[in-house]
Image (cartoon, rainbow over all chains, first blue to last red; front, side):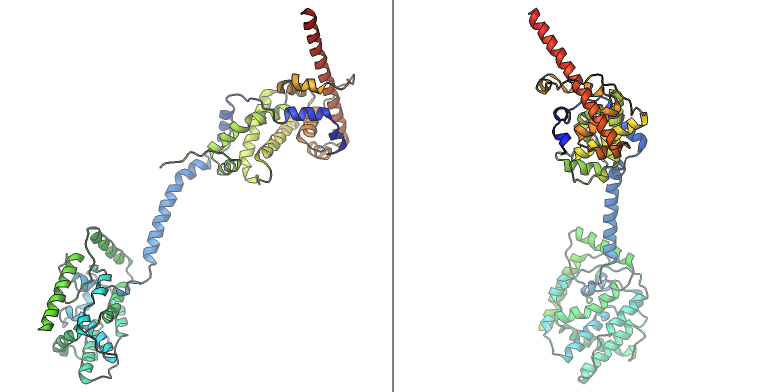
Length: 286
Length: 196
């Protein structure tokens, strides 16, 4: 503070008295200010943002959900084939000379068996794995099948075992190849007609399939369904599944050896699968 | 949807709400500071209605420029500076700057102790309001707002010498006015005591 300012009692007096003085404005001061502001800004941004903000929140949330559905990685590799679960047959999987759809399952079991033959024989009790079944969600598949399924079944061929085992085993492998041919007609090393009797044998072998193996075998099939690339179908399946879960149904993996009704839900499948296992174990004991 | 009515307890909350253009915050600011800002404007502009118009313009300017407030000083100080600037702009527009007053007599120093007790804010504002605009402005800027002569010269586009001379004239006039008031007051007291 300079000298002239320091020695001025008049300035101090007025500063002290007027610095924090208040003068009451007129009563309509705020309304005048408000009207002036409305003239200068017809629509305040607060009103618009407060109205628009909830819409933005909801739309952003909806977009996030949709993106999550679409960008979901193919984690359904352990999920069973929906077409089998629903008991429906996909169009391209049912060629003219093919046996009933249960054979498709035997094919998968064959593959695993072949792989198991390279390693070790497994016990019969492990054939149908309840643990892995409980984890899976069977969703009925749409009857419409696109050509993408062929590609996914080719993926199943990747697990083709090396045919360097004993003769009986080789036959199974050959039979498996038949089934692969049945699934993917581009690869058919053996004639289709020879597979009917061997299929029954294969079915027996498939009983010895361990649970983990069965799970592995399911992967290509599931890949088939998940790699459809048809987003709308996927969503439809999901909604169907959600609807059934909402109705209180349990979760059961579909067993291809069991005939399911078109409308049978998951609980029904669970019961049928359990019965099937029970009967199967009894017959084996006998 | 349930909306929580905010209570702007702290200045920071108030400023944040202002920055989001909330009309409630604007009203809260007006209600909280209108009296003080009206006093600021009245110090510069003697006419009350004109001062109120300037104050309203000042509030509008503050709401528009709230994004420029950096929270380095107090919000009230920032608002006060806006009011001062608005008042100066008004005075420039009305071109009532360089009115001179004649100081016929230089009075002796008034009794500030008496003035402090006897004079109310309104009396002092009336007294300041009687100063010509030029003197009044410089006195307000220098004595109350704390501007230096250099700042005043820049603000009013005058020389520092003019600022100093006008300030000394304003002081002299105020001293004389206070002394006059004091005398009148003592005269009234004396006459009352003689009657009694």
